[in-house]
Image (cartoon, rainbow, N blue to C red):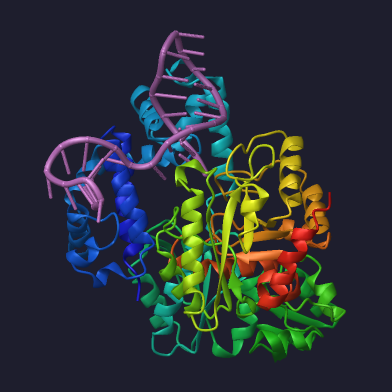
Length: 578
DNA sequence: GCCGTTTTCGGCCCGACTGTTTTCAGTCG
């Protein structure tokens, strides 16, 4: 069942943007934004709710409930469609550029008739922006930087969004009669942080029904190519999806081939050639006779080449073949190994769900422990106080034991200030079971200052985990320009874990940094940073990223039993390394 | 547009930073 929540959330967000662009009531725009967020993170599928049920979602009142109901019934909301007519679509696109908000986007459109990113680039190069009120050379520079960040993603979409659509397609095609196997392959199966296009494979004798079903899926906007072996479509969101139907006995060869990466496959084929064999998407063959050796499963193909099966997340030609040949592939962490989440939020700060709901959802995931880590006072907009935090601690203590075997931990996400200080003095921090500390502002300090700042946070005895260490947001904000080797060294020295934040916008640390950090002997924490019950599921992307960094359960503190985790937290409070 | 132990009006997450300005608007977290 596909949730309609995301669609409705996007529509309401669009209307909020349109209101902001056209200079409507800012509070009204914010109300729509808030409702969009609440609906997107609401655990119940809104399609099952009547207007009264919708109004129980915080931030949804009479007017928005009516519009959502209308949208669910007819697929249209005339008021929003009218508003859409008044603003060229490119203007909203401009708002996606970091540093450009609704006001500046509208000025660019009204004064320079700019309504797309390309037109904006043209205007900057002709130095047209400098004459505009509120713009200058620095803004040109920062806009260019923002556009470069966006374009570096090169039309690729984030892992989470790609996974959503791929899983829907796989579920739909698996229901077509004659389906003997259906899976996504490509960079998505390898869990890369961004995805260019989605590859879906089906094993079936007769491709026809699948090709037809594929072109008729509700999210298919345009059929790019339609043949007997391959069909390509563009989805309503502009993402290309390729479907290949393989004969069932070629399944393993096809899956191996289309999973890639290209560099990994080249290495594997070299091994085949050295053994007088040939590997293609149809199977493994004798080079001379052309006779097929095997093609049914990936395991058989790798085995016939003298290799163990290599997990897709390792298939990047980063030494996995050599390690496999030596029998030294790591025993990668799996999602089932995760015993708890150590970085999550509730509606006490910017989360959507109350403590009880978050804890119940965590327990349903089978966790043995679960940490609530709401924001601390220095993130001013969250309005945290000592009293609120202590009251929450009381509630956490009272609820502990009510979720089966799952234990509740009370923590916080501290802010690492410009000097590396955190929100509270040691006496107060000592009351938490654990503290995550993260950078939330002052991203553009000098490398020297940033490095010192992060190291000082590591050296705080009460800081156990550095949250989203580089603070990058994929395609939006570059990583901090710090000397991360020095930070990794400090983490190892002080017994501070580095977070692998599973939010698809972040995936921070990323795979390359994980590989580097591991060499210093650092431990990691894979967290969801959930702000809603559903976001607890982002753990899978964190685990995928950890796998891409070659991590085992032993490297990751939240795969450990609670006792060992507590020992790590205690040790860290003793070792300041100073 | 939402919300309510301030309850049908009048608030709404608030402060800092940035680049522009010559006193501040826009953007961000």
